[in-house]
Length: 169
Image 1: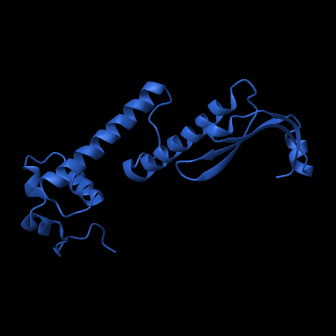
Image 2: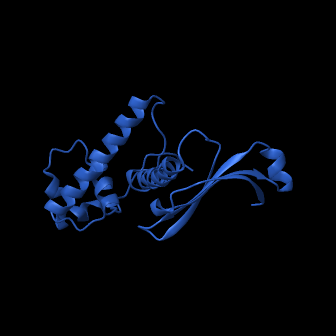
Image 3: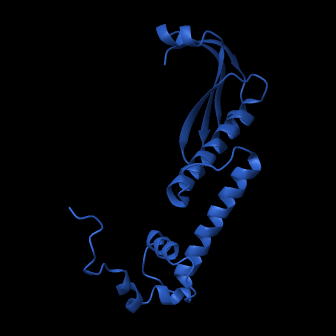
């Protein structure tokens, strides 16, 4: 990324800030797409040993506040990645804040319940397999531990029954 520094503000290097600059992008396409000035904040995270560079158009907040906001945003992004991978939420049922929060909490509750069930009943199957068995037997009145007993799992194998043809072809 090509840029020119317009101004540099003083920073407290003891807190991990390396620089707080006002910049203008100078690349051919970037200067056309973003002609206004930006703020470039460089922050060294002593916990991870990484140096992070943030670009923003926010000139109101302090540099340290912006660095912490962006740092915490990464945790939020990884949380949503975890939700997509583990909770199998493909889409949200609604767009209101309450609907989304309710759906996420229900999915987390189901996930934690399955983990507790797996641990307490010493079930060998994966969480995915447990969810599949439970979804098939959702209205069964059998105790859950019986669904995962070795003799009961054999009932899920396909049987080679002779069936009538539906169409005469």
